[in-house]
Length: 258
Image (tube, one colour):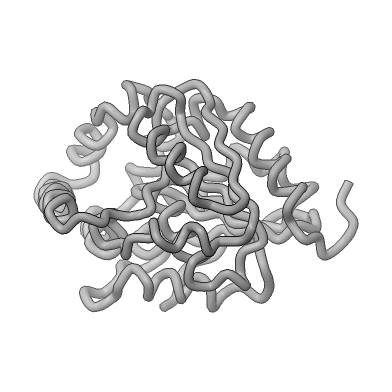
């Protein structure tokens, strides 16, 4: 499965950045100037986003995870936001040799109850229908109005969403939505690398999940920053500092960094 990959950075810490739904590798642009001297980044456009083709109907969540793993030559610190965080977590569970450290921002480990999964799949079908009938603009207006975003508007995110293809996003949601993710709750205790769990302090559902996850991971730290689901934008400076500090501390450098 081919994915468009955007490498950058002159530092020595291999770092994989996995963006959220409706975004692409440009999500990380605001951090590039600060992170570049320390990190050597691989930032793919996940399937159906940016320059990467939409996943076909037979492509599964784990197919995407395995394709990401196949593109890594050594262990990386993996930073994932929301959908990208679910891919990152599944990567650590299926391919632990690829992950030196794990940063999960606003991430669910999956749905264990059949009834809850069915409800989530039905919700995702409605989002897909809106994408395919109303287009990206109508979808985006409804998407960012969800309580999890707390009314926060990120101009960079809005610009990036406007360039996405509605049908490709629908295909991505059909493959990578929370309802399609194999649950990872039972696998958390087997993830031996250091883990940083992030959420907005006002994103109560994410906060509750992270409290539970912190107890299950052998080596986890939980930090809440001011804001809702998009703290990488609403608290960008603090978020950047926390993630860069963790990445430099736990990454395995390939060369000297400043």
